Every structure is written in C-alpha cells, then in structure tokens.
Picture 1 (cartoon, rainbow, N blue to C red):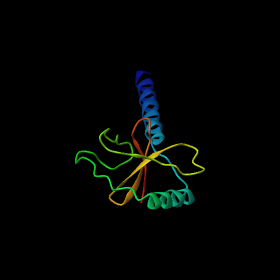
Picture 2: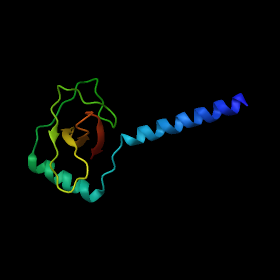
Picture 3: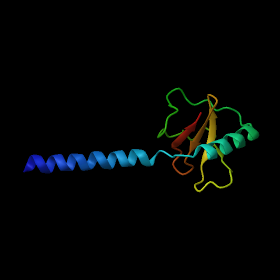
Picture 4: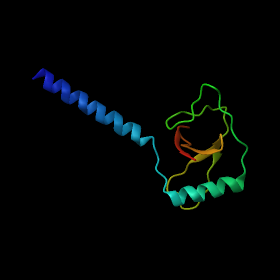
Length: 104
C-alpha cells in the first residue's frame, strides 16, 4: 500500500513539474511570428551579447544588465519584451525576464 501511494505521489509531482515547465513556453502562431519578425526588422535593434554563462533557451532568466525592448505588435494578447541574440528574436516575459520563445 505504501508503495502504491508513493508511486502515485511521485507521478503527481512529475506531472505537475511537466505542466510548470510547459507554462514557461509560449506558442506563437506562424503568421504572428512573421508580424513580430517584420516589426523587429523595422526597429533594427542592436544585437544583444549575453554573458557567457547565460544560455539562450526557454526558461533562462535574462540578467538585469541586459537591455530588452518592449514588443509593440498589434493583436498580441499577452505583452512580451524582446531582444535579438545571434540573429534570433528572443521573446521575454517582462515581469520575470524569462525567455519564453525563440523565433528563428
């Protein structure tokens, strides 16, 4: 009985952890990605160089010293900030400074 309860508890924690990890990921439709890309190209922001210990991947917190810009694109249901790193547009949650999506 203890083994069953432990297994169920472990499965529940694993599922909750997976749901939390997925919550960090934003899915932007391809047509919206095109609009974002056009906006970023038009703005022509300087590329950002991140500290060597900061990975460009979803879930990474962008250091305060790194400048991120407000993304002012119409029809966005959620407001994001952005930066350009290595030729990629990186969407950032303005409240947490976490990377939520990388548009190639």
